Length: 296
Image 1 (cartoon, rainbow, N blue to C red):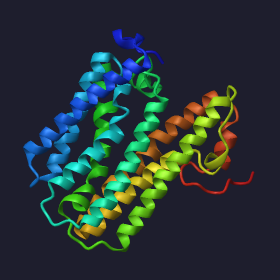
Image 2: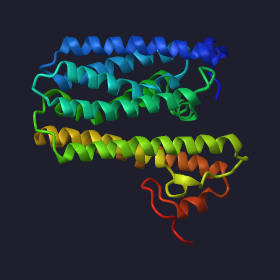
Image 3: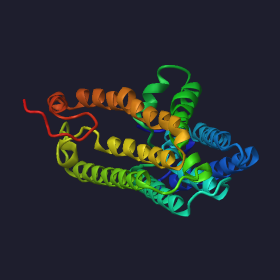
């Protein structure tokens, strides 16, 4: 899918430079807004920073005529939010918990961002899902609501667990924290293996061929399962820090619902159209949770 703006002819290196400048700007704005709201209102500081940064990237994406500018936002803002929560903490949060959360968040963020960077063609390319959305209404509005603010809301809800885990929770480090660390480590490993398996397959696949090897034999979207697990790990950290924040479960639930009702059906429908054997593959393979293939 080719961009239509004046930057569409930019090479990959120049495109990455534009994206880097955009995200430095967005992160600076997010931090400034969070500081202005103040550490005594961490939820509003988080919300303000997330929305402001999403709007900054939206402005950049309109300027370069490419909504895929937003793709890296998903993995860039949460680690920044985690750092802000930790350095502005208003309670005596256990140092060990802070370290454990940071290990999970930054391992996830660095891996996911690098995976995006490795696979990104440049500003000459825009995600086909965004192009499809633009046919359903005015492009500026669809881009704002569906491409930028919609995902921003999901990540905001999922990031709420950072407040008790890093900013306000004083509960002693216990079994739930170590369970959260284990779940987070499995999440990152699953995503890493799934993406590398898909990347190796893509180098040799034939037109219409289906990826049904490795983790993809057990799940049609093992990378998404890893993503879901990551956000549940953050919730477990928050729950251990302060059980009163149990309601932040709305975050990982929102991520799960997004994948089950939007992301997975959309990708599966496209695969059915482009790959003749996909329906048979889908009939025997779990959509999300890795499970032994069903027998015909």
